[in-house]
Image 1 (tube, helix red, strand yellow):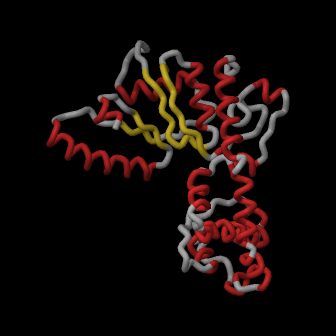
Image 2: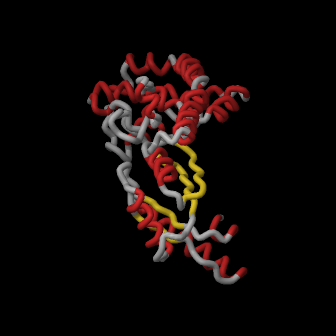
Image 3: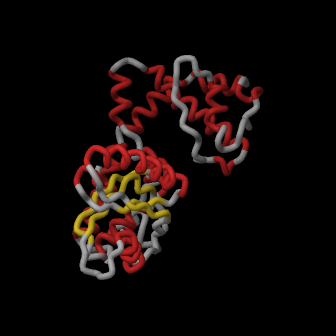
Length: 269
């Protein structure tokens, strides 16, 4: 959109090589169609690398200069962070604060639970020195709940489609099983599974763990009385989850407020 719709020169930086390949394929398809109808347009450049929290301003500028084939320091650009997971968001804010060439920044935060909480680092949470000095903290569960969109959840509740929310009871129950198998499985990411009215817990377990472990949960465990009793309490899980979601917008707002105050007070420097 920025390249073809608004004539911006765009450099896309991505850590995963398979996504770079996929983006290149999509670019080729769109460029072919666009060029036939509207003529030539400079294409988006793709850079396969990970932006680490300790990257220096000079290193980042060199990446941009190399991508756009710029041989001087007299240029301006902006930063757009789509899904800047964990410490990437705070890192981009730091670079924006340190590099005068960057004239704007637009980031959409996500995966707050992956923010580092080491007070010795100049990234993570809280980014503000004032908050660090006053020992401001948010536990993993608080940071995780801030990632969830309350709008879709409210819509399902208003429409009376409570059964669609049963998936949360499945997720809570499989977490219990995995932790009992190995404590290192706590909070481990699982595959997303879309809930349908005919999805039983056994099928959910297979789909949720297939890409990570394979079929590791025994049928006897799934069919045990203890697990059956857990699943019968799915409506209680929905109620509890609803209460948790009340706090999601408040917690997410706190991230943005701290970041804004940090930038305005130039605490990053």
